[in-house]
Length: 276
Image (cartoon, rainbow, N blue to C red; front, top):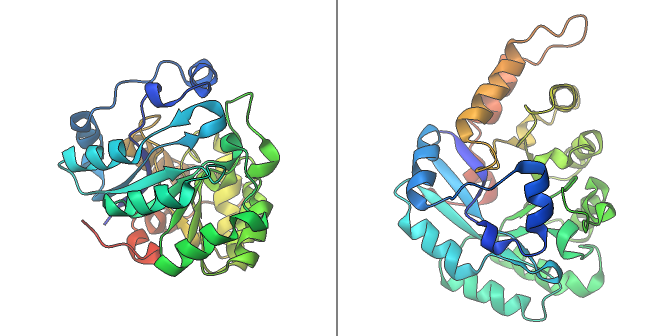
């Protein structure tokens, strides 16, 4: 079974002030109706669908929109709500998302501007731990000029995991370009994972990230993610397999078994989710 743990349903209308910077780097965002999403997800068995929220920049994908998108897909999909811990009503939004059938949370601290280690956020993390709700957290860089990079370094999430060890979280993009530090955080904390979205894009960075995961014995903590619609699952699958076919001599090789292990990881079980 192939699970894509990182796909998006948000549109340009949800991006607020972020849209101009996003478009500068990635170009116009294609329309992403459920039927087009279904077509792209034909190469995976289950996908996790998220939106974005960063209130200070006017970025918001409503719970209602995400839940409606999942309902309209014909491929098996699990919806995550997008929350901003700066919102005074974040606990109400969490309750609303759960009532709509959303099963996880996407956080975007680098744009929203919150530090997950601050004690004022402890009630949120205690609640998601109590409920067993998994988190997908954007880590690493961003195209936005408003992004606060220091909030996105993987060592920040070492702090979160020490403070709340029972919270299951996935660090998106292996925290690129800080994949080395991400690997060490994965090794240290039982409930911290990472997705490999975009690792095939910048070949040398991706190579170093995956070889380090092999050498530090954390391949089992890596999950497949495409970051659709920026890339399709097919592009991700093919890109990862191409890295394993490449001869990296005289340096260590990316083992084909490593890539297949990542692609066929039972991520749902690790995150406490059931296939729809």
